[in-house]
Image (cartoon, rainbow, N blue to C red; front, side, top):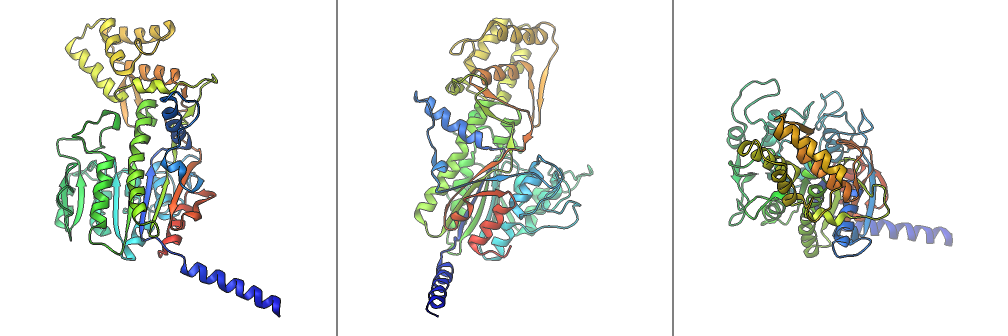
Length: 469
């Protein structure tokens, strides 16, 4: 009897402890699209090498107390796309590649964790560095049989009732999936109660209290995405701006809590292009979002949960491509993205169609460090010169196509050479089936300390926050 009494006492104590354990009311769900473990690894090796050290310079997320990793396959493929990957992270269920928030047939809608948070009374924000109707953000509020139904995806914003959407813009604001011209989705969104604001300073002097907001890039800027971090200047809207504004908006006069999803979407884009330095800068830029979330956590450590992960890995990035010596620090010599370098070469071709090889070499050198700070072999120079002759002598414009870009061949060759000299390797220009990291801190973070499937992540967030999901 005495033994049973002790067991009962222990069981009762454990139950009481579980019931009294705090639950987060401020939830940050941070998704680095395409960010595999090696993307994080590269950033920490690069920062160490930049200081003349061999090894790593751990960043904030690597010091989170709970770390796990997740598999990312979709229902239909071993390698997921962002539609199925985003859906898994949003709704906790597998679907086929290309679907957004639905079953594999595209007929049954799934409830996302964002809707579960809204039902509990939390304010909800869905933000990204790409378009608001892109696959990952869309998975949290839309239900479509195809990620390419951009107009239809954006049209679902008002029905969500979420408090804030933010990103570059909309991809097909006046055209349906079957190419019919319709009323501008901006007007439809405003008609149904949302206020559209634009530009990086939109939340500097106002929180638009009592209003639901769609926050977009300036009309003069791209609606597809924000500029790459490596290409931005002080006047450009950044993911850091969006995150800071979102926290301000969602936390203002709010003691019930919020759910904020932030996507660093262009890690994926630059990885598709196998642009190492641009990818590195995108990862470092995403860390600024993590830092802002962490600063909020420090103010409310018993009420905040931060989860950082990815929908998949992109590019099959390898740090080390043969030699035992790494040289990632030379990536610092690249000043602009591959896409911007491609544009400069295109401008040179227009302004000076018969530009000399020295003209082109100078342009490459100024923007990548090749031929100046970074030595180029005779073999590599011959390959670049061959591309130059086709382009500027024979006027045959060669390009190198990736998922989100179609860049000048000279530009892509230059970046490829710099990548190789920097000890980077890429398996492909697509996604991979590699595990993605999961980092967590705050209330409920201990749930993320093991190997998971991507569908487990929103379920564990819901478990921690006691959401009906």
